[in-house]
Image (cartoon, rainbow over all chains, first blue to last red; front, side, top):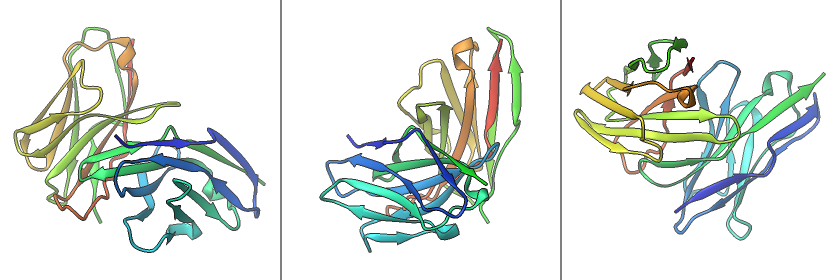
Length: 112
Length: 114
């Protein structure tokens, strides 16, 4: 069965500095991987997805993630944080159509 | 744009009450899901439905039931609410397509059971 581990429960960065949110996954097959973002009092929004095409995936709002099979990682990055990036981020792995496994979440704080 | 709506943003119920959480999607999606979100645990799947009147248990179905009488509507039922069911509940929907994985989420219902 697949699973995902988000290595940091909380990340704090200053505005304008790079963001790195770490995610490791476990899967018996070739998984699909996702990052979702949840702003306060809002539902989850898809940031980006990897589904066995290019290993470097670009998403919305300047975020990107790189699928590294050898390291079983799918870390989320952004070159320059903005105040509006403050939110909770979820890494998700899926081996099948209706089976998505969510990480515990990483809360990103952006300091002015 | 896909829109998934949930009947209440905040709900307060008493222990032992029967609670209904409603979810409606407007994109004719076949699949619908109910998740529970708790701090430090991420989202956990309670039930999902792949067609009208069809349902499958997720990882934590105990204490919950669901109903899907129409394609666009998926209801989560707490037969007798308990304090350990205090949580954020998220509904999602997606197309029935082998190559489409994205789920679209509603804004959530924060349920407090006292």
